Image (cartoon, rainbow, N blue to C red):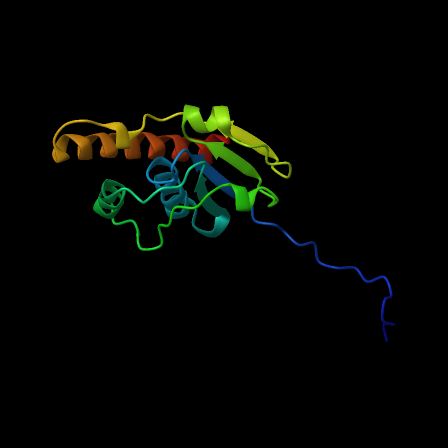
Length: 152
């Protein structure tokens, strides 16, 4: 019989790596990155996204995700400040402005900078702007798939 508090061999607990995608507004690029990583990696990662100055989710973000059959019903823009004390395996900035102004996450193991053009800044007709969102979605998707394979 084992005594309470006796040294017992415990099964090691495996922590799922966590990823935080950061952008300026958390309305397009970081949201796409979150949904795409969740799609490709399933439950292999805990994924979230946040913005330096969170705004409203861009409707074109929703459209380009739904075009690919990806869920958009849980999208919600959030700020980075409440996340500063959390432990993240990876903090990934997805725009130059977020990289330049990103606060320090003291409990992050790795910080990566992946700069993508801001699709929300696109000009022109709705179809032209939608094409820019599609292009950025494709670039994020390709980067994520390469990262999942190579770790870089």
